[in-house]
Image (cartoon, rainbow, N blue to C red):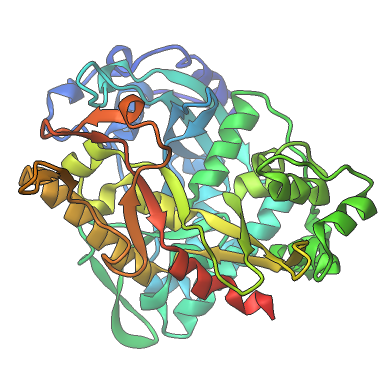
Length: 459
């Protein structure tokens, strides 16, 4: 077992793991186990530090108050590094946590200092996780800065207040900004009792959301400097959403021409001109809100929505291409689609054309996908696509030989559907895990659904 006297000893030893792969670290033949998934942390604990894996209430290195965590890093198509997923922390014991304050909570006592091992999440030639060749990229001791801590305190209070109100069964990832209460268990049927209600609640764990973890990747590995527009002092008195409204609400009812004039910028003629104007309001160049620290850590993406003068909304809302390999091999509860829907907050920025064809700013709405939508309509779509692949029924032909792609259309459930984005069929062709070939497909929210979320801003 590794011996240490101070936190500095611990951090120095962790640094020695950088550049090593899991196969170099593993001393217990962990890779011979059929259930290797989720064992990265176990390998680091047992083989590198030499202590048995456990689920104790105190931090892993309790004498110095340090918790050990591992998290995967992926390279996105843009070339940027990002966290593969949220960082799951300790299980929430509803029965005891409700009687704590923030600084005596199980979250804070266990996780206020995190020794994080960032590893490269790579795949082999068969597109399967190549666990042996996961490499430790960086190890850091992370402590929350003052601004993050204010946001996390508010998140913890939201979670704890629901438990106190006997509403632990209504907890949702979308309730909070950085500190989440993610489902944790073998299945959605994993439940626990709660102190102020007879209704069993899903078992949940505290977690740091994927956006926050990606911001840490950019900070610690890419050494990227982010712009901040809030302070810990401001967040003591106002919510992040209220501070966001302070930026935008002054322009409600203004035309994009007048906003540009007020800001002293030239109104772009590009297709994404409204998105560029939003960036000007926030004081950044381009349309990547990840350059703003709070947007990056809170995983906020913005979408401009433009209504016609009669109040119709022509466009549905698209996401990236579906990962059919994952859908074929993974259950919905373990999917990146589910985590994406749980973790992203959407900033809808709403415009409307007037009788002179000027574009008028109508307001903003910060929205996350409700858990009931995730657990019903989105789960149904995922499971339907999976079953169609298993049945080899994605592609069929009518009596005239015309190809039919049997994936969910806009009428599937009134909320979401699947279809291509872009017109070049030949360049977008992919082979599904079942051998069928189709153009790449995106997940979409129906325009009628988006309208129900935002049309109240028109008035």
